[in-house]
Each structure stands twice: as C-alpha cells, then as structure tokens.
Length: 201
Image (cartoon, rainbow, N blue to C red; front, side):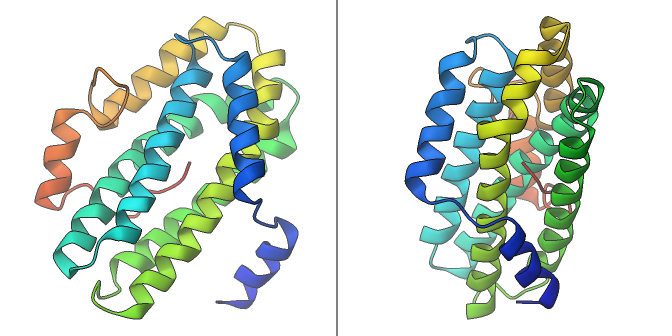
C-alpha cells in the first residue's frame, strides 16, 4: 500500500458492514422506485455482488471474467454519476462533496488500470482487489449516507436527473430490464472490451 493510500485510509476510514447496510436501508426509505436514487442503489447492489464474485473466483480465467463484469457495471455507473449527479450536487450547494466524489472516482480508475496489469494467478491480484473493494464500498457509503441524501433533498428537477442518469448509464451499459448490464456491454466484457481504466461508484 502506497503512502497516499495510507493517508486516504486515515482520512476516510472504511465503515463496517452494519453501518453500510444501515445507510443503504435509509437511502432506500427515501427513494422512489422509479427515481435516480433507486437506480443508483440497485447499481450499488450489483457492484457489491460483482466484488463478491471476484473474491470467490479461484482460477485465473474466472478471476479475469469476474473482473471484466465488475468493470462494465462500474464504468457505466461512474460515468452516469460524473456526467449527471455530481454536477447536480455542486449546483445544489454541495461543491466540496462533488469535488471529493470526482477525486475518489479518478483514484479508483487509476487503481483499476493497475489491477488490470497484475497477473490474476498471483496473491497481488487479490490484494489489489481488496484495496479497490474497500475504496469503492467506502465511496458508496459516502453517497448513500450523505451526498445523495442532500441531492435528493435539495436538487430541482428530480425527474430530469432520473432521465439523464438512466440515459448516461444505458449509453455505456445498454438497456436492461433490471437496470444492470445490458446485453451489448456484457458481450463486450466477455470479449475483453469492457475493462479499461474506467472504475468508480
């Protein structure tokens, strides 16, 4: 772990499972089922499941496949946040939180690029997975427990945010009935096109 990683860990300590679950439940309680926040929470659930699939994968081939699936949902989700939700957060008077959110996702993208270059059969691959997982789960906790609650409360044109978030997510991931990866994105991931350096939450 680099010096920068250690410093960031002290600034933003990782919440435990109980706190993360409580934040998700509280956010669900104020989200409408057809709104942007509900979609974000669904994507967060999918991201958590993809991380678990990466942790459970044993062979190098299975690890690469799980990593690619994770990368697709992370990229589509992070792009939608960066194009739609973070600007809205800044416009709602939360510029510091918006800037912090962008910074964290940029760091995650850099970590993802490093992870891609690590041989999946090595212990270093699992170490990097755990590092990225911890950072992304903490980032999602910040969104669910604070940033996006402010956005839900303060932002005008909530329907517009929903339409735009969906549009940007589907632009990358494709349309899917459950709000997750579309068929085209999943096919790209299986071919090895969906990884890249795009990562965040």
